[in-house]
Image 1 (cartoon, rainbow, N blue to C red):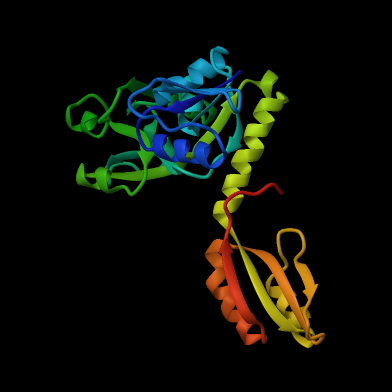
Image 2 (tube, rainbow, N blue to C red):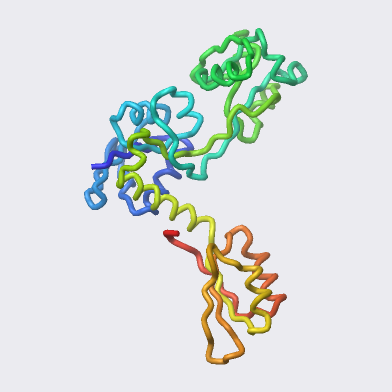
Amino acid sequence: MLRIAVPNKGSLSDPAVSMLLEAGYRARRRGRELVIADPTNDVEIFFLRPRDIAVYVGQGTVHVGITGRDLLLDSGVGAIECQALGFARSKFRFAAPQGTMTALEDIDGKRVASSYDVLVRDFLKAHNVNAEVVHLDGAVESSIQLGVSDLIADVVETGSTLRAAGLEVFGPILLESEAVLITREELLTDSRIMILQRRLEGVMVAHSYVLVDYNVHERDLDAALKITPGFDSPTISPLADPAWIAVRSMVKAKEINSVMDQLHAEGARGIIVTSLVASRL
């Protein structure tokens, strides 16, 4: 039975559960269950602390898990990323009191507070910067005012929390993180995990694309196909009127309104857009 670890709380939890549900797994809790059995798919889903998931996967206690790339790299365990999942995106940055630091070199000899000390140490070592990393479990923004550190390294989304604390980001981005599927290297070819990956990929494609159907006169077909080339190739079908052709194609969802405008300008008519539920490409 395949064991899948899912975050039990936080910004990763709900999207991870929703994604598994869309992929056909029984992942919704009725209460505060720690484990859900899905005998139809021969799967058990474990709800664990996001920071612990990489540890369980790395030790082989569970086969595969969903967590943040930042949490995986900070864990230092023998688990690897096998698929990016496209949600919970964030950037990991240095921040210091406004006007005090501008470049990576300014960190040398300073104290850096972070909840991701392994990740920060590895980054500083790779860039030949000598600094003391102070581990804190949370609320690192207060560490400078309280005299524990000179700067911080943390996940930055909007930056509003940093600005409220009188801090500003500087220097290079340490990491661009997002939710990822992780496993052990020796399990990458496990058929059960490969099926899980294909299902999740199908969900992501369904979120990113829509189907567009339209009719176009044969003289305008080439121009229309340049607008809707499709994922691989569009489907073309004859209509009762031999001068007109029906076209079906996949289009990126965020571009669909512009695509419809262009199609209409090229003579396409009967333009219909359909959402995708799942896919295998």
